[in-house]
Length: 251
Image (cartoon, rainbow, N blue to C red; front, top):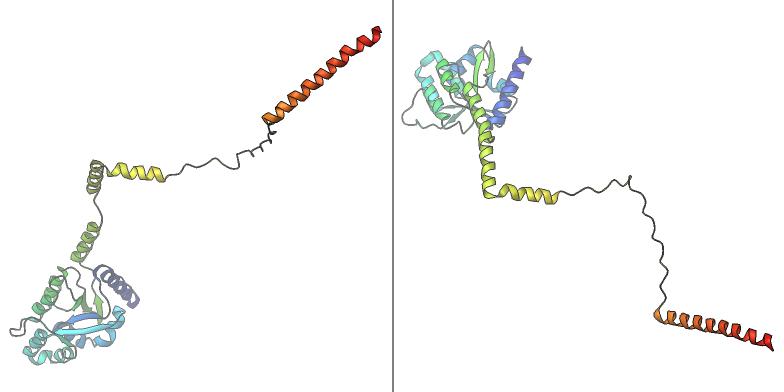
């Protein structure tokens, strides 16, 4: 049972750390009913609570709680001695003290900015605490301190925060329409097409390129003229020998 309670406490602590920013040292506000229950069940709050929450803790109360315990007389004298060992946090009721439950509720107003835990056995106070988001609740059951699971108010608050971080579908459509009207969609598409590079052919399927045959250099004009003159002289010489041959035969 002890291992199971610690697993539940670890899970619940993770919820408050991740969603509401709770950090060590954890500040726990205790009232007289919680101190009286700890005394009756022989629970050492200062020694056992840090181990249960898996972190350093600061145990504190308010002046209104101490005044209330003093007014109740000898029946809660032991609880008053326990509460006096804790830090007394300043509240707004210095001149006109109020009940302990009313004072603790005032300490978590405005979204519990100081990240207080509330430790109480007062069922009426616990019901009011559950109606506020982000306030962990501690109580004692069967000689054991228990961290209550996140309230419905806390769960709803987390869901609302998550929805605000996401853009609804109808808003996405309206954003696209506005972009089209302003011509931003076409510009972005043009940029995408410009960035896209056409892939070349597969190098494995390409044949090796044939080497170009070296072209014979063309003779210059002067060389062509000399060749024609030499060819003409050769033809004239051949023609002359053909004419001289028959004349020698007649003589």
